[in-house]
Image 1 (cartoon, helix red, strand yellow):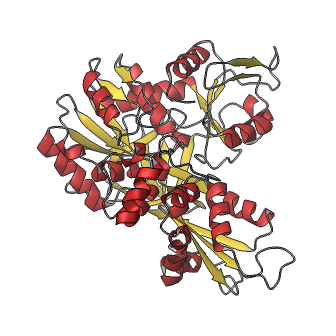
Image 2 (cartoon, rainbow, N blue to C red):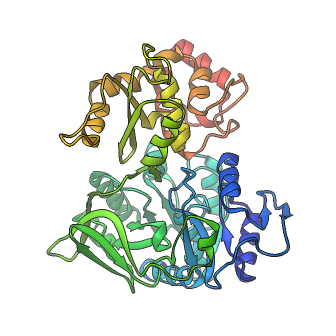
Image 3 (tube, one colour):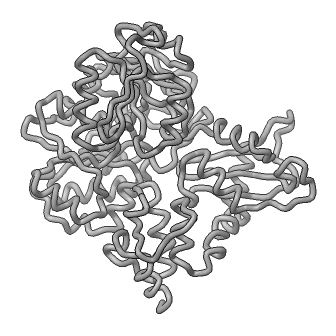
Length: 480
């Protein structure tokens, strides 16, 4: 589902008519193909609005409460879906609208994809208050986005951590946005010093900065940090949303409330199920402070967030192993580490590891930028005394010198070529001189990686580099 009017109207009409809707990234045919094969939809609506009716009667029985299906693993292509009811959607929209104090006169820009639960929650919470939506797929680094924001009197912006990285690299702090009332952040942990930075900037500029916490399994939001506490408690996720409850059980955060999903679906037969979940075990480790504020201290499962998208490490590892590679995968916020034995391809016991190939395969399996992947060659994978994989040791290897050497390997291979760097980062076979980052389909996920590498090549990053032809950028690189 793309940020286009025809997609939005189709989505809302389908909900209104009582259909169970499965949202997918319209610009990711591989993800769409995987969902189609796993779930056998009755009707498909393409990004351009074209409707394909596969059958007149449902292929699978559907529970009457089922309204929306979303992937639990961001863009990893994991077949597990979250089952959400109409009550879930309306409850969380009201919860968000209440703590953000959304007004009928507000207008939110679609800074995030609408198939992503965070982006969708912005839509739902504003529509439930009769507020406006500035529908766009422009990047926040595009000057045209800010022209639109001013024309539409945008009052709120939403972003994940990489959004704020982009904003800091642009001239956001100098923009004239007189109608801006609040900025929200979710989709992964923002470093406490950056929370302080944005909270202070908001205080000086006249808008509020909300740090929020949530999961698709809770429709979207579970907690928020009141703006007046952000400077003094920048590492906190705050308090539960209105009508919700958080508690710490055996060190893990549990959530209950009217926005908790009906349950998971792993096969078409599960779509007939009613509620199978009443309390959500978030998988996050946490604690509650004496001031009543909650804090996330770690993750207990094999999921990590990379630039705002949750990645299933088991899925990534399985796909690499299915390709014949002897690997172990670990990760943390913003980083995937892969240890691979020299005999990484079946039948080639003496072969060396093609680090670039492993990085590309990992990036493709997890749908993350190449810059978020580090590969470390080992003779044996680290193990614990009981024989299990030592995931902390795998992660430590990637964060050490070996990981950094691998991380820089692609830059050396590029040999100073802007075209080759673009091709590697954007998974293109060839990049012509007249191509731009925008024309090649570069998105916010790849923006940070490409901008950093381009700055290394050019010395200084041009303000409109993302719409500057590769040939012109190469001329600047040659002079650097």
